[in-house]
Image (cartoon, rainbow, N blue to C red):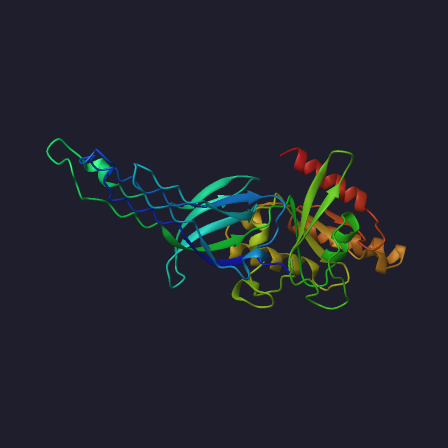
Length: 337
């Protein structure tokens, strides 16, 4: 199950209390104060983990508490510091501070690399024991300090897949078929709309060492930015992609208008998102005879060149026609960035 949004509560550990104690030994009637300080409370720390690609592990656990510091003891023994609580976070996750009602207050972290660490909640300081307060004029202080409470926060976590290429298109345009053909990903494929209900990430191999990642985003329809279809819940995943691939179905009517609709939805979701580098892919060319295919492609290319001055790449995600050409073009763009 893919989960890219969750809310959690975290709390740093309470500091240990300072100790009130006096040295009591035989033949030493006035040994003086020897109460130790309390230990520091543990911290809640987020660590980026490249092996995670979903927030599923937060589905049933919503509260993360660090260990409290131990109280000080006599004989000037300081309390142990509380253990930190580590939260593993998928790379590409943004962490926001929210209030109890869920209203966003501020962005506090952006996990962008493996093993990257952020202290989300600090532990409370340990209280001082009475030995600290001894002075020349007050040699038997009975004063101590309580440990401080740790920070308590409500957080919102939003995962945005970090991929090189994002596939954008209407439902049933062939995005899932394409990603399954060029990578080892296995998304659901069927002949009806909205077969893809969650983003799918695939790794494309170009050689022994060269690879790039592709994200298949669930189909967009007109009005998605207003909540229609699957709404905007998955559009966030193309914010960090370097290239967009607009997948268009050659069997559709008004193909150029459909392309404009997709661009408009991206722009209305977030300005400048439609200004990313992009390629236009014309899919399902295997459904026509050679003569009909050439005629349709020529007509569509002419319309795009007149209105957009942008070349299109005709492919068949089923038969694999022109797939190598597409992969090479993507690799070329990525290598020139």
